[in-house]
Length: 177
Ligand code: SF4
Image (tube, rainbow, N blue to C red; front, top):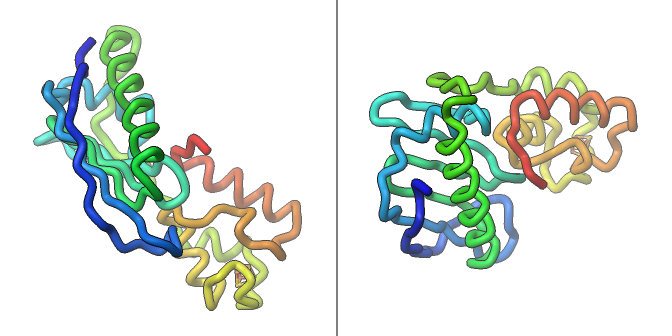
């Protein structure tokens, strides 16, 4: 097992995902996982990947951005310590599994392509009705492109457009929930 232990720190974070207080979680890893990161990137499909020093970032779920580098994991905008600890436990398993299966995985040193707000906006009603909690459809499209909204967050989106938007976003976002 590559990653066996880490210590966790929490600090307050401001974000648009949670109306209430949110936390930033930083896990300081006791083992260096840099060699596992290209394999983890291949499995998870990171939003960004930096080759040197290795680091990848991806969206775990709506608005939760996770960044992994050689000796730390940062989780932004988590609701509470329990949610962050669940993500850390899952990520520890993913890192260790990717490392154990590295001979079966082609390492990936590039980032995934990003969704574009323009492509998302094309699928929205463009009525700026505000029912999603944002003032405009453009704001929704920008937020969705960053992983902060999904198709069902637009309550007036017809079901066919909802399916199309979900299919489009699933090409980019890693989203476990
Ligand atoms: S609910 Fe849908 S149509 Fe209304 S502003 Fe939000 S994205 Fe646009």
